[in-house]
Amino acid sequence: MADLNSSCAELVGNVNDALGAAVVDLSSGLLLAAHHTVPYFTQSYLDAVAAAAVDMFRGKTITTVEQLLANQRGTAVQNSIKEVQMSTEHTYHFMSVIPGKENCLLVLITGRKANLGMGWSSLRTALPNVASMCP
Image (cartoon, rainbow, N blue to C red; front, side, top):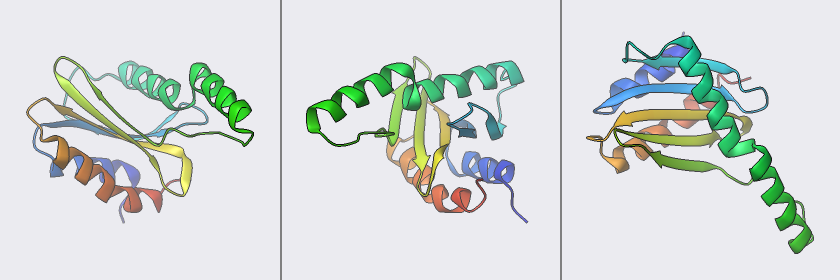
């Protein structure tokens, strides 16, 4: 039977130059699952990256902007960010809130040789499978 860790491993295996994948709980910042091929990705590093991802989707600045939008529009605006792509000098990060599991985030990290379309396609293809295993 598949679990979240093996789903992360499968995602990494499906993308050329993939370095790692993880599932993050956006309400607590906890890492629910992870798989990576990088020896220096320690548990402390992975926990810090998970916390940073939570800030990008649910952080104080984001909630402040959502509150401003809600006030301007006269309607509730909450948890409005669904996907983020981020680049560093050597990596791409693909992040998506898992549909139907709004407090879970799927993250794929690749090297810069990865095809952006393949990264997004693989991440989005994995979402339904991962959703079925998320709390």
